[in-house]
Length: 125
Image (cartoon, helix red, strand yellow):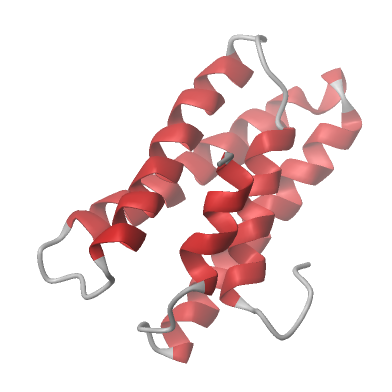
């Protein structure tokens, strides 16, 4: 199972958070994903913007990891484990991007899958 599949599963399997929380998560991920895409399209000249977007994406995934690690989190254990795995993947892959050893596409794909899971009726932006 790849990171994209796990990301899609992670948010499409449950709806235990409120719509307001899901909407906030959706908007945060959508904004940072848009910035990642925009910087990536620019290539080398867009690297400073890519670094900024990657930093914000890391902060977002760190917040998700902290949230699902909380004993008060009501998501099922399996889903929490999948989200934690995605947070770890995002951290590690971001380091590889910054070192020039990987591309940003997998990070964008994970975020897009999460967006689809958070908004299953509509397409992710």
